[in-house]
Image 1 (cartoon, rainbow, N blue to C red):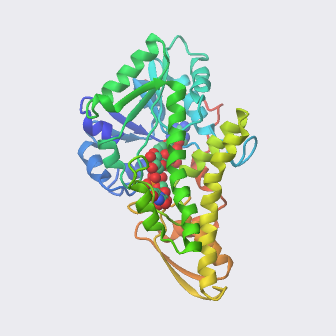
Image 2: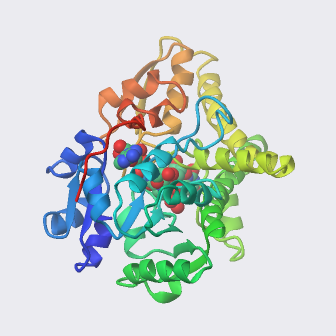
Image 3: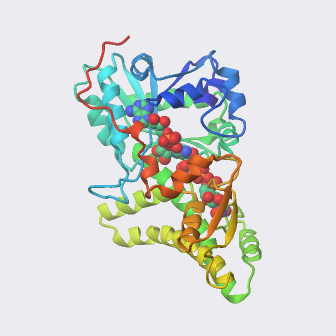
Length: 386
Ligand SMILES: NC(=O)C1=CN([C@@H]2O[C@H](COP(=O)(O)OP(=O)(O)OC[C@H]3O[C@@H](n4cnc5c(N)ncnc54)[C@H](O)[C@@H]3O)[C@@H](O)[C@H]2O)C=CC1
Ligand SMILES: O=C(O)[C@H]1O[C@H](OP(=O)(O)OP(=O)(O)OC[C@H]2O[C@@H](n3ccc(=O)[nH]c3=O)[C@H](O)[C@@H]2O)[C@H](O)[C@@H](O)[C@@H]1O
C-alpha cells in the first residue's frame, strides 16, 4: 500500500488495522517490521497521501477501493483443521464492509485465499447491500519478504481477476489503472476470478516444490558423494529449468508456503482429487524430513548426543533481511536439539529474545491466531460513520 501511495500521488491511501500497537508503530519512527527500503518509502508519503489508522470503519466507508489483506491462517480446529484456510478474519472484514458502506466499492482480495472465496464474499457483501454495488477482484500478492520493495517496484507480473460481466471488467480496468502508474501494461495480467485465486496458490506450490526437489536431491547427494550445489548448478543451467529457487537448505520457512500448500491439499481433497492432494502433500513431507534429517545429522556428528553440549545458532528468522520468524526452520531445529538436551545460544540481529522464547514454546500454527486478531463480535453495534 505504501508503494501505491508513492507511485500514485493522486491517490490517497489509508492503511487500517484493528491492532492498535501495529498502527502506533506504523505512525512512529520504529516500523513494526524490518524490510529493506520500506522505511524510506513510508517516510516519503506518510502524512501526505499515506495514512495509518485504527478507525477501520470510517476509512472503509469513505474508500472507493478496499484492499483486504487480513491474515488467512491454517485452521487449528473443526472441519479441515491442520489444512484448510481459516477465513474467520476475512469473513469478519467482509461483514464490516457490508455494514458500513454507503457507496459502491471495489473490494480487492489481497490476502491469499482458497479458490472460490470470492463467491462466498460476494454473498456476504450483497446480502442486505442497501442497493450498493460491490465488485470483487482477486489481486494476489507475489512479493517475497526481504526483497518486498524491489518486487513491488518491478513486479514480474501483477495479476487481476474479476467477473466477466461489464461491471466486473470496469472494476478490473480501474485497478489496472492504479498499477499502470508504474507497471508496464504487458506485465498486468487479467483473468477470471477463479484463475487469479488459484494462480497464487499454484505459484507458491511450484516455488516450494522446487525447494523440496533440490532438498530431496541433497539427501541422495550426501548418500552418494555428489555435491548438491554442483548438481543444482548443473541442473539450473538448463534454460527450461532455470537457476532460481534451487538452493538446498534446512527446509523452507515463512508464513505462506506451508499454509498455502496445506490449503491446496485440502481443496484437492474437497474436489475429489486425492492423488493430486497427495502429490502436493509430499512437498511438505520432504520439507519436514529435511528439517529432522538436519537435526539427526548434527546429533549423529556429535557422538549421537548433544546433551549438555553448547551450540550457537546464528540467525533465527526464516530468511535473510527479515525479522519474521513465522514457520522458520530454526524453530524445528532448535526444538529438535533442545529435545536432546542441548544448551543453545541463539542470536539474530533482527529478532528479539522475547520473540525467540515465544516461538520455542508456542504450538504449531498458534502464531497466526494472536489474541488481538480474534474477530469482532458480529453483534457489535456499529456506529453511524461518514
Ligand atoms: N507476508 C507476506 O509476505 C505475504 C502475505 N501474503 C498474504 O497476505 C495475507 C496477510 O499476510 P500478512 O500481512 O503476513 O499477515 P499479518 O498477520 O502480518 O497481518 C494481517 C493483519 O490483518 C489485521 N486484521 C485482521 N483482521 C482485521 C480486520 N477485520 N480489520 C482490520 N484489520 C484486520 C491484523 O491485525 C494484522 O495486522 C495472508 O493471506 C498472506 O498469505 C501474500 C503474499 C506475501
Ligand atoms: O505468498 C507469500 O507469502 C510469498 O511467499 C514466498 O516469499 P517468502 O516466503 O517471503 O520468501 P522466499 O524468498 O520465497 O523464501 C521462502 C523460504 O524458502 C527458502 N528457500 C528459498 C529459495 C531457495 O532456493 N531455497 C530455499 O530454501 C528460504 O530460505 C525461505 O525459508 C514467495 O517467494 C512469494 O512470491 C510469495 O508472495
